[in-house]
Image (cartoon, rainbow, N blue to C red; front, top):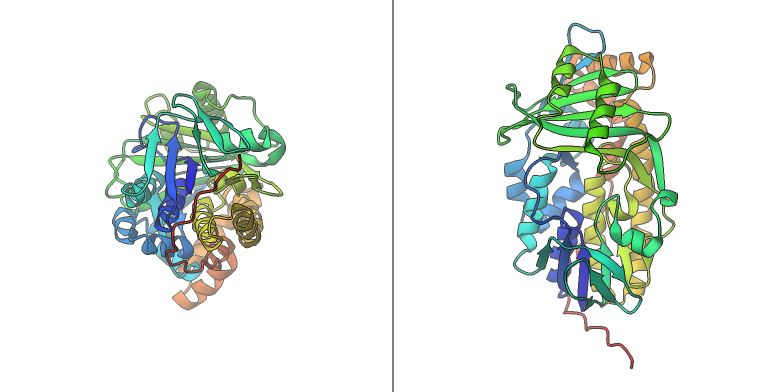
Length: 409
């Protein structure tokens, strides 16, 4: 049974690995000419994602490439001194198993795990999907597949071709984010955050990174006017949003025209009643993004990919049955992640001066309390981590290879 996956970031390769393990013939098509190896930002892997990486035999590499960020300093706008927080205490209290890793590092690791059993085709993209399974590409000749799966992110081509325009399916939650790389000023396992009303900027570094990353988050009561690939306009919006927050942040903004990598997007959620239509389904941000940078979407994507592969294997390739089971299992997780993302955005990007002060006070409390009392406070303040830790993934042993679907004449 032949399966085409669009997207070679994280959800796509994880899905490809498990489908190949279950006997499917898998091709992954990716529009970029080569795998991304620079840029990106740190993502959190909570217990179920770490478990999946371990089952893939990739955990040792994930642990080796983890950022190791273990402390945070929070600077409320106008404050001369920051509040230092032990991040290991935060995640230790909230999650039974947690790792932070750069997105591009994780993508490379899960691709490497699947590359011997999966065909990867770079520099091409899908242009049409026919109901009978014929797929046309921008460059390659048309090919027929039994199933087509979109794992191509928030602005998914597969979703657009199957479900129509993105706008009615996307819910803007009132914020934007940007990421850039710049020379590391000496940060080692530390996150520095400057917080003001409606805006938060942070820088972090890791031992194996040759540079540092800066993450900008800011609120807007309306959607801003810019094109998805208009980088100059996006940088202008960041400068306007963060002007005057802090002299250190001004220095970060000064690197915008020199940075080797830059990314900017809205923080939006996808709200779809179904992720499947005919032979096509969606996984990860393509189908149910809870909101990049605030929603734990990487863990959700890895869980979704694992569940989808397992249900297709259990159903022996019966995609109608498998897609229905996949959606039934994932729907409560997706709904929970949406709610958690909205709460996280409110905390990370305070809407009032009181919110800025509250974030600093909670940080001081965590830093000052004894370990047991600190854990009690943290359990109340880390709903997102506990949500993802509560997700369960069944063990799907290898199944015999499903038979190919034979079209009736």
